[in-house]
Image (cartoon, rainbow, N blue to C red; front, side):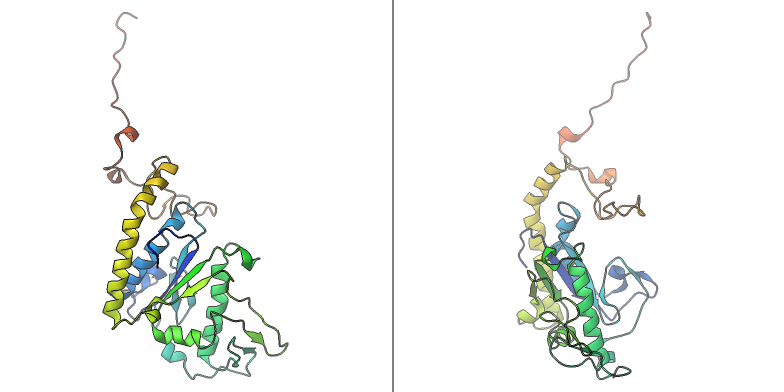
Length: 273
């Protein structure tokens, strides 16, 4: 991933086995340090989505239970893994053919179809009616080989499923302008810890590259400071919850002096009046 500011970047990160014991937002459900660094990378890679172009970047979670899972959706703990889906036949006759040309015959096949459909909806938001207008230009998939191989073997990122009854392609393919990347599979990592180190380095690069860009963003927004999540008007759909509310006063330590209020002077009453 380039450390430069990029609009149109969507990041899909793999879930984790260790989970919270209660229903929480998906981004907080997985408790391993491995997931934590993937989440940190995803949030850094799409950091500009909540400032200059709020529809341009996004991240989600690849889940064996839920397919593509939005990070803010509340989810209960579950135990489903890819291995639970392998070689488990679906009930009834196959109704669809995978993009690879094979029939949907197992639960793993059906999961791959769900991922395909979910990706199509997610990558085209908010332009669901026209795939040419999708904001996605780069899809970065950070997941283990068991998840990625199951999808790539079925051509989920490159083709379209077919309805066996009609012989017609069903769901739309991924946005045509989207480049799909698999950093974990493209590099010769020697295990999880090397992946985590690489991700941490990328996060540091993004943070360093963001400094001058952040200054220009603050100038464009009249020097405003923003917090991660708003706590007001949460039921107002038009409000950008990711980047609207002003932060607390303790974040103004480094504000340029010209933005600070001048000292107030108490006016004494006119004794002659």
